[in-house]
Image 1 (tube, rainbow, N blue to C red):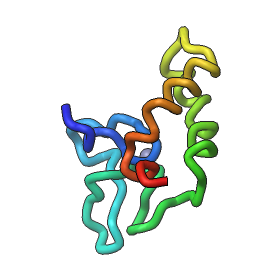
Image 2: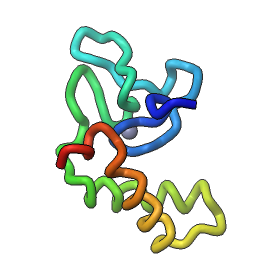
Image 3: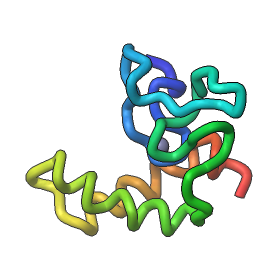
Image 4: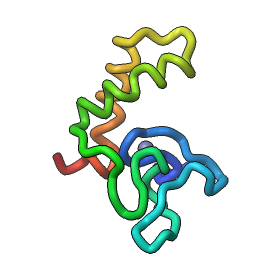
Length: 89
Ligand SMILES: [Zn+2]
Protein backbone atom coordinates (compact mmCIF):
# COMPACT_ATOMS: atom_id res chain seq x y z
CA UNK A 1 0.00 0.00 0.00
CA UNK A 2 1.50 3.36 -0.93
CA UNK A 3 1.02 6.67 0.84
CA UNK A 4 -1.42 8.01 -1.72
CA UNK A 5 -4.01 5.62 -0.35
CA UNK A 6 -4.27 7.97 2.60
CA UNK A 7 -5.71 11.45 2.45
CA UNK A 8 -2.68 13.73 2.52
CA UNK A 9 -4.50 16.17 4.76
CA UNK A 10 -6.43 14.21 7.40
CA UNK A 11 -4.86 10.76 7.03
CA UNK A 12 -7.99 8.69 6.47
CA UNK A 13 -7.52 5.64 4.26
CA UNK A 14 -9.40 6.24 1.00
CA UNK A 15 -9.18 2.72 -0.32
CA UNK A 16 -9.75 1.24 -3.73
CA UNK A 17 -12.99 2.94 -4.73
CA UNK A 18 -13.36 6.54 -5.87
CA UNK A 19 -16.02 7.24 -3.30
CA UNK A 20 -13.86 8.98 -0.72
CA UNK A 21 -11.58 10.93 -3.01
CA UNK A 22 -11.89 14.70 -3.32
CA UNK A 23 -12.24 16.62 -6.58
CA UNK A 24 -9.95 19.01 -8.39
CA UNK A 25 -11.23 22.27 -9.87
CA UNK A 26 -11.90 20.55 -13.21
CA UNK A 27 -13.99 17.99 -11.32
CA UNK A 28 -11.53 15.20 -11.86
CA UNK A 29 -10.54 12.99 -8.96
CA UNK A 30 -7.90 14.24 -6.56
CA UNK A 31 -5.38 11.47 -5.92
CA UNK A 32 -4.12 13.12 -2.75
CA UNK A 33 -7.05 14.27 -0.70
CA UNK A 34 -10.39 12.99 0.53
CA UNK A 35 -13.74 14.58 -0.21
CA UNK A 36 -14.01 15.90 3.33
CA UNK A 37 -10.81 17.92 2.98
CA UNK A 38 -10.73 18.86 -0.67
CA UNK A 39 -13.51 19.90 -3.02
CA UNK A 40 -13.33 21.47 -6.49
CA UNK A 41 -9.63 22.24 -6.10
CA UNK A 42 -9.79 23.86 -2.68
CA UNK A 43 -9.39 22.71 0.88
CA UNK A 44 -12.75 22.76 2.58
CA UNK A 45 -11.24 24.13 5.79
CA UNK A 46 -8.30 26.47 6.19
CA UNK A 47 -6.78 24.93 9.29
CA UNK A 48 -3.37 24.32 10.77
CA UNK A 49 -2.02 20.83 11.31
CA UNK A 50 -2.77 21.02 15.04
CA UNK A 51 -6.33 22.13 14.34
CA UNK A 52 -6.76 19.27 11.89
CA UNK A 53 -5.55 16.85 14.54
CA UNK A 54 -8.12 18.15 17.02
CA UNK A 55 -10.85 17.74 14.38
CA UNK A 56 -9.75 14.14 13.78
CA UNK A 57 -9.41 13.05 17.43
CA UNK A 58 -13.12 12.24 17.95
CA UNK A 59 -13.24 10.32 14.65
CA UNK A 60 -10.10 8.42 15.49
CA UNK A 61 -11.34 7.27 18.89
CA UNK A 62 -14.76 6.39 17.49
CA UNK A 63 -13.20 3.88 15.09
CA UNK A 64 -10.59 2.65 17.58
CA UNK A 65 -12.51 1.60 20.67
CA UNK A 66 -9.56 1.19 22.97
CA UNK A 67 -7.77 4.36 22.02
CA UNK A 68 -7.71 7.35 24.35
CA UNK A 69 -7.77 10.95 23.13
CA UNK A 70 -4.15 11.38 24.14
CA UNK A 71 -3.11 8.27 22.24
CA UNK A 72 -5.01 9.37 19.15
CA UNK A 73 -3.43 12.82 19.32
CA UNK A 74 0.05 11.41 19.81
CA UNK A 75 -0.32 9.03 16.88
CA UNK A 76 -1.47 11.78 14.54
CA UNK A 77 1.29 14.11 15.64
CA UNK A 78 3.75 11.51 14.42
CA UNK A 79 1.82 10.62 11.28
CA UNK A 80 0.62 13.99 10.00
CA UNK A 81 4.02 15.62 9.36
CA UNK A 82 4.56 12.92 6.71
CA UNK A 83 1.46 13.95 4.79
CA UNK A 84 1.83 16.18 1.74
CA UNK A 85 -0.27 19.04 3.08
CA UNK A 86 1.82 19.44 6.24
CA UNK A 87 5.23 18.30 5.09
CA UNK A 88 6.74 21.68 4.36
CA UNK A 89 5.24 23.61 7.22
ZN1 LIG B 1 -8.96 14.26 4.27
